[in-house]
Length: 450
View 1 (cartoon, rainbow, N blue to C red):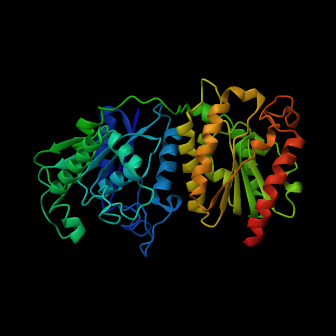
View 2: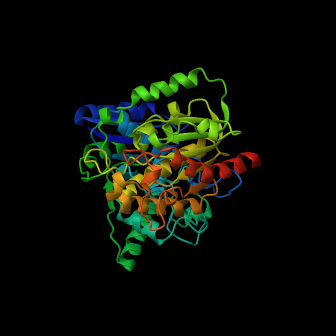
View 3: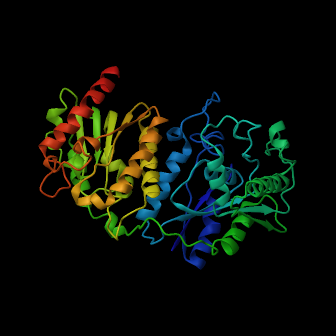
């Protein structure tokens, strides 16, 4: 089954969306999900405008934006719904169309194959003449590469030919009116501007503009047109495999973590260690990290994909000052489950953004992927991913990149097998001692400053 995720209008009423889309989901055999963004929790700046700015107009880093939640949500839907699809189609109308077009501009989500944008009230133009949310003048994270990526994405701009009224709720600021007088005209100007940018720079332009006749600003009619005519035209995408059984293969281990946390009343800790077997097998972690109060929430074989699914069970009720993350199994060299570097990088960012959203003052320490003899053939990919994370952390004050991989190499740059167990993959006590010497001073300093 295809998976469609819809973003509703500013009335925040999901009921008629459910009725309309259910009809087509039953008819065409797809699944439809509607995240509900209430007015109280998600006012205009946090819904239509993605939470890019706070209530005082200050630019927020990506982990505090609404988009950080949406990537986690899309991943969760793909991995728990039973679909064999690896990406979703997203559709937004009116306020939802505003959300979708800004999400596609500001985020390179690995979970979206197509976006359909219906009748937004106003747009964020790739222009340095206006500040956000009308332009990108004050957004340092939007450069030419980001704009080029946007233009190459599989996106449909769906415009109603009758959406020409200037109702009381249509935004009429001077910036909005420079985009033209009504939604139809604003949509045409936005599309033509994107096309002209692509032509001027000789960039790929994969957008399409579709007009819906005899319809005004009507969510139901536009949804029917999208469901009937636009969803079948999907692109074939290779990428993340989401076999449900495979992703849930370590559920027993997760249940064990839950059992421990259910009886653990010591909820406020200095550091929460999360990740794969290199965390789980750090048996003397609590002792070597003293006087820090740490919790070990690692489990063997973990990947970022099943960690996204199990996020709440891993973190449970703990309130950490810092989080240490190590997970190296998404690049594994296996036919089943192996990902490309860019996909893993996107998963790391989504997971870290989720942590920062829930624990705004916590610092995340990302441990670089270690090189090992058993995975020597993957070293080039591991180094590429480590460099991406190092550069990403350099621009994120709440994310610290810790190079632990170089500690395990000899003077010639080869893996020092004396620091590994007999499987030449996992660390022995000497290897963990190297990690502890590098990591513990950073954590003590962080928690002391708290």
